[in-house]
Length: 159
Image (cartoon, rainbow, N blue to C red; front, side):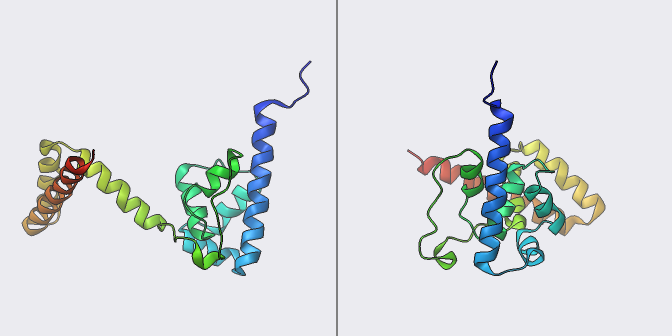
């Protein structure tokens, strides 16, 4: 009979470790949870649910927690996977500021646009023209083309 508790118990332990780390960081920063939530781009209820183990932690939620608590990217994952934690040397001001949730969503949209075919981009352009106007369609097409050009340039520079 296995009394080790298995993967679920280990995950619960890591969730408890995350909750403790979040609470310690909040105290260290001296910032109320509502302010942390606003900075992270999530509700205070989301942070409560994470700390009380009532919510699954998606990659987007992990990044939001890191942004709100001014932790470096990957900090939450390191806690949950029981890996060495990225350094916080020099206090919170020395930690590189993670992207806000809005910036992360913009980056996700950019990646989607870069992966679109010319036909998909033009179809969206036609919808924009009908709904908003021709100038906006042209702006969309130019912006999408620029994003794809930048991606191609970056791909060429990679070894």
